[in-house]
Image 1 (cartoon, one colour):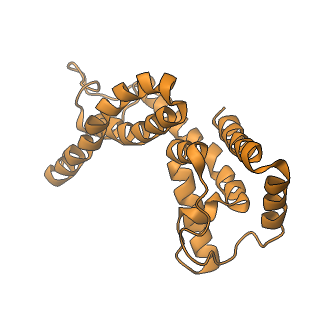
Image 2 (cartoon, rainbow, N blue to C red; image 1 turned 90 degrees about the horizontal axis):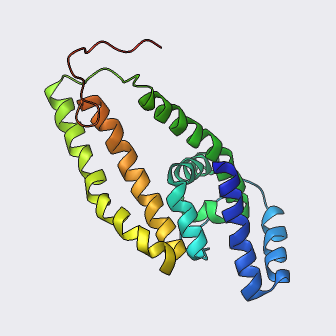
Length: 196
């Protein structure tokens, strides 16, 4: 489902550009970009920044996939690059390879949490302090989630962008809460792990 959503948002982004610039411009852009090698030095950041609201929302929803594709691009070319490099047509195809893997891992961890197959509680003082600090970003994002609800009707793409950013800050917070055994992962008395 997330792969279909990624493809739909990408297609909509090109459709929106085609409506304003013309179908010939978009077709020419796609053909010229696909004619180039998949991995080539990007040159400099900021060279292709026509993200638009759809591109920004897509980056927010699939941020780890975009970062993974950027790292692969950097390793393959031997030059440090930025996320602009994977906003080209070739880069979006590369990113699409990471999207299913990303959401598969997220789905597995959410399923594990839902089945109460929690990971062992963290006991070390330094580790607990570090995880406690990592709880803060998710708490900071909660007001943005509330703001994203009315924005869904006024500015849908901005709202989706906020939802994406909020998820990738709240999700690690949830995993930290699991290791710290704070709400909603507090156990009553029995601390043994549930059977698989």
